[in-house]
Image (cartoon, rainbow, N blue to C red; front, top):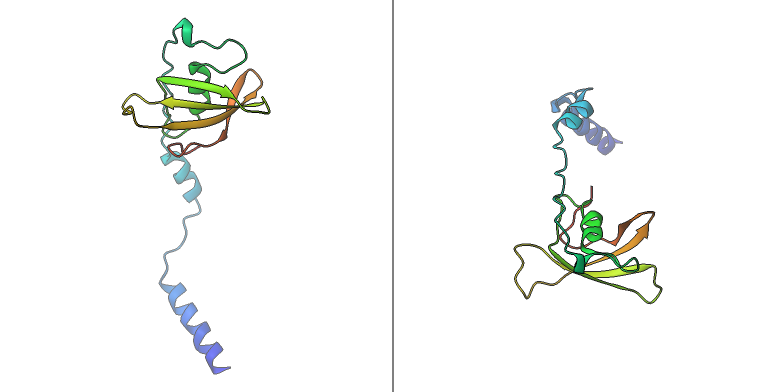
Length: 125
């Protein structure tokens, strides 16, 4: 019983030293958030445009636009998986070296594509 009393007294003493919680802190946090940067969608040459069956560079750029900060690939090549519902895309960013390998898995979602497997360099919103 004595141990419980000392433990309770310790907790009360520590909590007495704590600062009160501001009831408007959620509002303050929301107002301090920096809006996500809009990705720059690059011009896609006709050879890189989608043929209707495989996602194009622009479609991969839109799928990766959900990353924070936005990831904008400059080169991409996508291939359908065995199921045919998902696509594995190898892509490169502007400052990548030739040895850099990046990969994302995307799937059709309405008129666009969404990330199925989040790449290492992508923190989603």
